[in-house]
Length: 111
Image 1 (cartoon, rainbow, N blue to C red):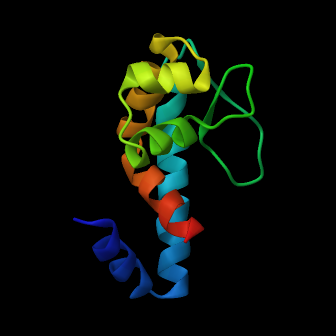
Image 2 (image 1 turned 60 degrees about the vertical axis):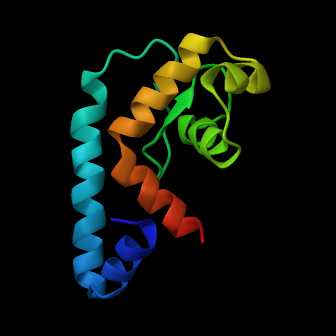
């Protein structure tokens, strides 16, 4: 399913169904994320954002992942671009790919 198709399906939901969908996704992520033992990623308190950040930086893992996709970078190029260890980039990719539905909704919400 493309992002455009997903957006269209979400638009067809009632407001209450959208809220239920978001709540379900957030709860699922809250339940799933702590199980991982991340070396380079950390959760930060935020009123609504539940994504992980790169430790020691005000940088969302999803920002690195999206930048790689948009600019067609290899993990090595991203590591050099963001001045991060390659293992931190690999961890950010693993996290974002495991949470791809959330990332897709986050991207869709920005536009």
